Amino acid sequence: MNIILFGPPGAGKGTQAKMLCEKYNLLHLSTGEILRNEIKQNTELGKSVKEVIESGKLVSDEIIIKILNLAMDNSRQDNLSGYLFDGFPRNIDQANLLSSLLESLKIKIDCILLIEVDEPILLERILSRKMVEDRSDDNKEILASRIQVYSQETEPLIEYFSANHVVKKVDGVGEIHEVNQRINNALEGF
Ligand code: ADP
Image (cartoon, rainbow, N blue to C red; front, side):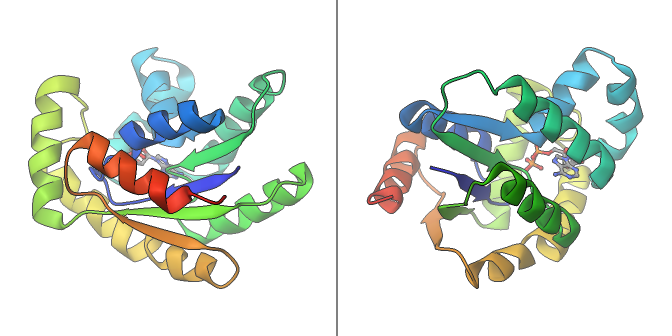
């Protein structure tokens, strides 16, 4: 099974993605997580994206494609049942890139999953996550920019994909296990 996960920053994509990947034996491809690791390890790539990430804007498509290809190559030997794209694609160019990538790999997306959470709750969550994870892009000002990028560039992709894909919308408000249960229900039958 191959899934694309959508949702605004703070919707809980990372948490739910991990649970889903375990249940369905999928490779978790989180572009944000890969980039954060590069920054943590202070690599050349990490240094080149730090400023962009800390402004809440998008990293260039070239960098995203490079890290995705690397992550997918590294996983080739693993016995996987599919991929879960988390944080990619984020704009129309990346959606087109994904289409060619999927074509060359001869795989199809089975389901687009959207985790929905309203803005005031996103802010609450991001501020409490800041105290635990200390992500440098988790603060009120940067969140506003991330939400703006999401609604202008990423959210329209849901409409775009709905032409040819099943889109399942899940309420992301509630306890982690409740949201997880809703997602499992939504994915039943795939
Ligand atoms: P969130 O969805 O909570 O904003 P992510 O971990 O997905 O968090 O992304 C964090 C940041 O990493 C983004 O704000 C952006 O700067 C960068 N990033 C992640 N994925 C992409 C992508 N596909 N294209 C461009 N930039 C990305």
